[in-house]
Image: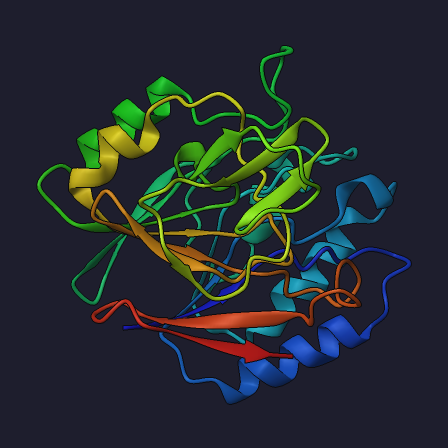
Length: 269
C-alpha cells in the first residue's frame, strides 16, 4: 500500500497560491492508495472568516482520491471548531476521517489516527499531550496488531536535555530553555533543520503502544525530514508541504510511504 503524506499546508488568505498549484501537481502525478493530511491544513490564526473556503481549497486537491486527516495545533485557532471542521470534511465522498481518534483498516494494514491536541493547559508544557484515555482507547483498538500511527505532534521520547557551554554541539539544537538533542541510542537519517517541538510532558504514549506499532508518522516541525528507529517503532518525520510557512528555509515537500517495507520517498514541491 502506498500513502501520500501531506503535512502542514497552512492555507490562509494571504498565502501564495503556489502552495495549491504545487500540491495539485504532486497529487496528480503520484500514484497512491491513500492521501493522509497530518494537520495544520489551514492556518487558523490567520483565518477570521470563510474558514470553509480555505479548507475546501486543500480538500479539492484530492481529486476524489481517498483521504484521511488528523488535527494540528493551528487547525481550530479561529472561529471554527474541530466538530465544524469534521462536518466540512465529511461532505466529501472520498473522506475516510471518522473523528479525532479513529482506526482504518485498508489493504491488510491497520492505520491509527490520533489527535495530539493544540496547547497544554498549564505551565508544565507548551504543546498539548496525548491523554491517557486516548492511549487506553488506542490500545484496545490495535491490540495484537502492528499498526501505523499518524499524529501531528511528535512524541517526546526522542529528545533529552543536555548541559553545554558552547553555542552549538554535534546533533544539538538551540532552544530558549537550553540545548536538547536526540538520545544517545537514537541515530537518524535525513534532515534535522530545527529543534523538534514535542510536549514537555511525556504521558508514556510510545511505551504503552510500541508493541502494537510498526511506524509512527508526524508533522508539525516544518524543517525536519529525519527518520529513526526507537523501541521497535519506525519514526517518520515529515516537513511542511506549504510554500507559505518555512519554504524559504526548507523547500516544501511530501513523502510517499510504502506500508510493507516502511520505506519512504521524499518529493520536493
